[in-house]
Image 1 (cartoon, rainbow, N blue to C red):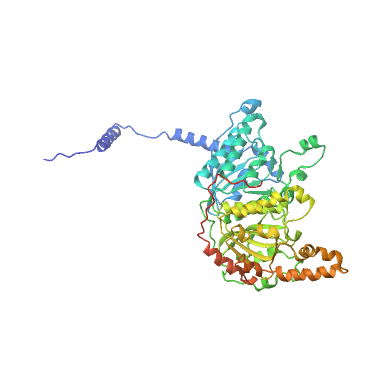
Image 2 (cartoon, one colour):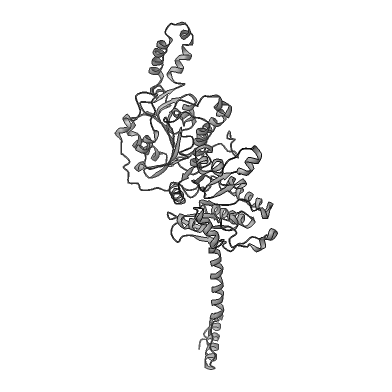
Length: 550
C-alpha cells in the first residue's frame, strides 16, 4: 500500500483542529479580548479628534473672526471631495524651552498629505494658524520637507497654503534650519514639479523666500501679507510709519512688486485659481500638459481679426482681444495681469493643447518693453520651457522703453533676460508679428534669429530698425537743419522710409518671416504648425547651467 505524504503545513492544521476539538469537548471557549481592542480603538479615535481640533474651539473662533478659514476647511475647499489623506498627523515638537512642553499640539502647526484636484494627485501642506500661530519649528519644517521629498519621488505638484507667524522663536536656530531645509527642496523641485503657494495670512521674514522660490504665488485681498521686515521694524530702521497693507498687502505684490502672480478677492476664488491653473500644467517635467477636448473648431476663422489693427499705427488697441479670438473658446488664464501691463502672459489652449501666450500690449506704454515687463516675460518663458509648454508670441512693440530711470535701473541687464530665455527654450516656439517690431525688441520678441521655429506676420506688420519718423531724423539730420520747413520734409521722408521698411515684405524676402497671412487665418495656421512640432527635439550644448543675466 502506498504511503500518503503530507506537508508540514497540513500537519500543523490537523494538530490545530485536534486541539480546538479537545478544548471544545472540555467546555473551554476560545475568544478574542474584545474589550481590549475596543479600548485601543477608543484611544485612537480620541487622539484623532485632538488632531482635528487643531488649536481648539476658541482659536478657531478667532480665526473665523479675522475672516479666515481654518487649515482643514481650506483643504476641503481646495481638493476633490474625500480625497485628502493626511501624513504625520501625530507629530509634535520636541522642544521644552520657554514652557513649550506644556504646548504639544498634534501636527505641530501644519497639516500635510496628498489629495486629488480635478482627479489628479497633488501633495500639499496647510499651515494652521490656530496651533502656535502656525509658526515653523523643527518638526513643522520636517513635515513640509517630507512632502517635498515624496512629491519629487513621485512626480507630483506641491501646493502650499501659507498662514504663519514665521519662525518659532522658542526654538531659536532650530526653526531657522527648518526654513533652510524647505528652501533647498524648493530649488531642487524647481523645473521638475510645479509649485504653487497660496498666501492666506501673514508671511514674514525668512518665510517669504519659500513662496518666492515657487512657480506661482496667489494672494487674497485683505488677508495676505508678505514682507521681509514688518511695519514696526521698518519704522525703527527708517523712521517711516506704514501699515501691513501698505507694506506688503495683496495689491502691493500683485501691482507693484510683481511678487504675486494672481490676486483673489476671497479664499474660495484663490482655490478656484489653483484648480484652473493646474488644469493647464503637467504633473512633472517628464510629462506633456493634459489634452482637453474643448469642442472648438480647429479651422475656425474670425473675420474681425482682419480689421482689429487700427489704420493709424500710433493708435492703441487691446491685444487681449486678439488672443481671445484665436484661442480655444476664448479661454485665457492671464498671469500677473496687474503687474507690468505693457506685457501680457498666460495660458490658453489651441486644439485642446496648452500653450503659453506672450504678447506686447499696445494699450499700455505702446507695448514698449521696460524693466518689469522684461522680468515678467523672461520668467514665464522659462517656466513654460521647464514643463513642455509651447510658446506663442504676439508682437507689437516700438522697442525698449527709453528714459534715465530705465537705463539707471538696468534695462540692459533686464532686457537681456528675454533674449536669454527665448534662446534657451527648446519647446516649440511660434511668433506672430501683428504690427510694430522695431530694433532690439524685434530680435528679442522670439525672432527667427533666436531659434524660433516659425514666424508669421500680418500685413500690418512693421519690421525695421526703428520707427519711420525717428529713422528719418537720423537719416536726414543735416538736411533738416538747413531747410525752411523741416516738419514738412520730415513727414515726406518718414513716409518714404515707412513705404520701404515699415512692412513685412523685406523680412519675408530674407526668410526671416516664413509667411505673411491674413489675420483671420491665424488660429488654424497656429494649430497646424503646432501639430508639426509635437515631436520636436532640440539639444543644448552640454553644460552645468548657463549664467542668465540676473
